[in-house]
Length: 386
Ligand code: APR
Image (cartoon, rainbow, N blue to C red; front, side):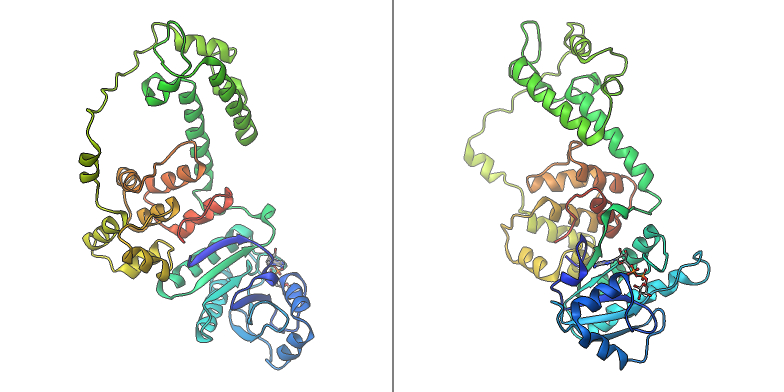
C-alpha cells in the first residue's frame, strides 16, 4: 500500500529509511529526534556532526546504526507561528525533500513521524493534512511505500473540513440502521423483516421472539457502548421499546412487500450466467475510462506488485477494501460501486462504519483515497488499498 497511516514507534519500524523531525543543528533534541538518537546509538550523532546542519524544509541522510532501519533521513520542519509565514510550504518541502532523498538512495519503504506536530507547534490536524496530501501526491508519481506514523493516537484528530459532517452522517445512518432493525421505518421495509420474530398474528415469518429479543438486546447493548445513544432517542415518541414493537407488529402496519421467489433454475444455467470476473471487469473499466493501469492502481493506493497479481489471475478473489479502493480510483457512483462490490461478492452496509465513511465520500464526489484513509484511520477501520 503506497501510503499507510499507522500507530507505532518509528524507532522500531523495519523499513529502508525512517525520517527524523530534527532541528537545524542536527545535533539531537527531544521528541522523536531524541528517541531516534537513543535507539540508533552514539554513532548517529557522530555522523550528524559531519553534516554541517540542515535548513528548514531540507533533508540530509545518515546510516541507521542500531536502528532496524537502514537509513535515517533528517529533516527540519518549520517552527509554527500562525501559518501565514510560509510554514505550510516549508513543511511540505520537508516531506518532499525527504521523499526525494529516499528515492535517490533506492529506498522502497520510508516511515515519517508527524513533522512539526510536537515541539514546533504545528496544529496536529494541519500537520496531518499537509503530510497526507504531500506524500499522497508523491506516491501517485513514484513507486514507494510510505508509512505515516502516529505515535500518540489520543491527540490524533482529523482536520479536514468534512470531519464534522462525517460524524453526523455516521450517526444518522446508524440510527436509521437501528430503527430499520426494529422495523420502525415502514417505508424501508426490506427482507431484513423476513427474520423478524414470528408471532401468531404477525406477517413476519422468522425465528422466535426469544432468540430475536436476545439478539436484539445484545445489539442494543453493543449499540449503546459504541454510540451511547439513549434508547428514548432511538425510539423517539415511544416510552419504551415494548410499546414501539407492539406498534410495529400492529395489524394496520404497512403490509410486508411480497417477494416473488426467483424461478428455480438449475446450477448449470446459473454458472453459465456467471458475470465476468472481478479482474476482467476491472481491466475493462480502466480501458473504458482511458486510464493507464499505473494511474488507476496508484489512485487506488494499491502497489504495483499487487496489481500485476490481479492482472495475471482471471479468478483473482479481492478483499472488500481492494474492491472499494478501485471504486474510488475509477470514481464510480454509489450505484456503480454497489454493482462492482456485488460482482465480487460484497455489499455496502450501514451497520459497517467503514462502508458509511466510503459512502459519505462517494456521495460528495471526494475520491481522494488518502483523505478517505485519514477518516478510516480515525475510526480504527481498515484502510483502502493494499
Ligand atoms: N515515534 C513516532 N512518532 C513520535 C515518536 C516516536 N518514537 N516520538 C514522538 N513522536 C511524534 C510526536 O508525537 C509528534 O507528533 O513526533 C511528532 C513530532 O514531534 P517532535 O518530535 O516534537 O518534532 P517537531 O514538532 O518537529 O519539533 C522538532 O523538537 O525534538 C526536538 O530536536 C527536535 O528541535 C527539534 C524539535
